[in-house]
Image (cartoon, rainbow, N blue to C red; front, side, top):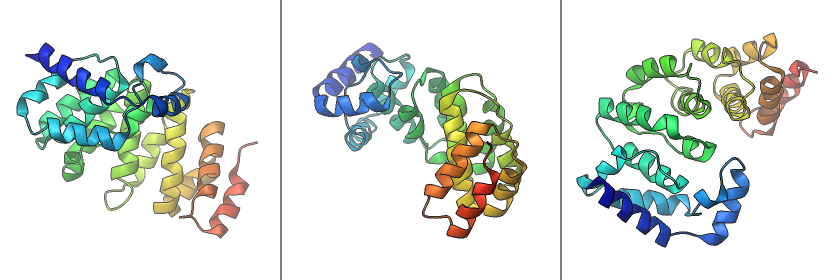
Length: 231
């Protein structure tokens, strides 16, 4: 049954491939073999996954890992997003994360049920963010950015992200994105961190660059941030 479901989903995805968009996506994902990219646009993949979710037998696709095409991972993750049971959703999320190998699959994955259980999810974030896998770390930072910079924000979240020391480009870019967004949403504690200059040179300066490009940050703060660049 699983093999039949895998073959059928792959066949349908191959029928949806978009050659022109494939070239565009390939340029955004230089670390991924172009042959693993079908170029199917995200809205189409989401609709495709939504239709799959109407038949519970298609959830057996979640038992099949690894996949070959990145679009198969999109479908896999979008199916997980439809799971309403928190424990099951966490289980399936942790199962797929070690196989994620690009920022696109990572950054478009955000199960809705996690927002309904912020405290429970946060416990997993604090434990798993110390992973050795690039896109697992990036994913948990992404969740802190998307789900915890408003009412659920706590100052120690800034410290958790700041303590991640790495030279992995895709982790550092997400750190910078996180701190730049935090400067817009939680400016006082975030600016205090930036003033300390304890982040790596890349993260510190990229954070300042992204913040200065943001429309959500005042001109006054943008000017002040220039004082904290690491030369």
